[in-house]
Length: 278
Image 1 (cartoon, rainbow, N blue to C red):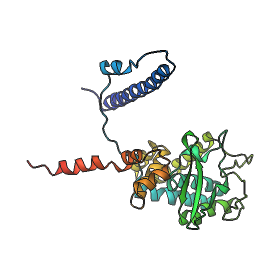
Image 2: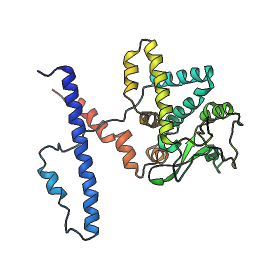
Image 3: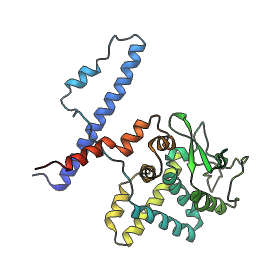
Image 4: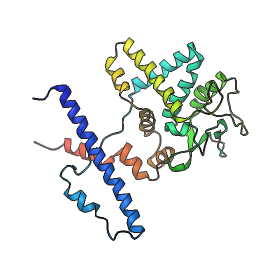
């Protein structure tokens, strides 16, 4: 008999092994395609290797995205707002976490990179005069426009800018970095933004532990910043259609959005399966 801790460890190792195998095959497949294009090999032998691999489990079970439930997300907002009210240094933590969730952003999209620096004037009124948008450069250096809720403009962006001594709304010609260092004024890189998110998570975990909500605290301890993006996208399903959500998230295909967040085929199968007769 395997001890509970041992069983958990074995299961985790198995999961890592399967993921590693799939990632290795995906990388090798790209390599073989390059070899074929370069006319260095005549065919892709990977299919045969994959077919004969006794360790690789075929097929893929649908896994819904990791998200925070409404109660935990409300705790995030309240905890970070209270912290910022008590100490202005936490205004940036509040801004980063709410931006990642509400605007469906990745940490990298808030961070300064060699080829791009997020600036306040990337927030701007849309030419339609229907609302505000944010210009983002995401994965693969792909540019997209994210819609910005009025509530975010009023309660997140405006508050954060005022804490920096700026006007609530940015000017079109304003080139101030969105996340400047408090010491140097230079735009923050991804490692620094990661640290801000980790500190924000620690604040929420501490609050939940003090409230006796140990399980919720443990769930957040095992979470990543990407859960914020997933939470925002999942909640937005009630307000946006699949095509709109794909554009907000920066997915190249609506199919990706459907497979991750909507999964209609999976839901239909579970619903039908629950109705089978004895």
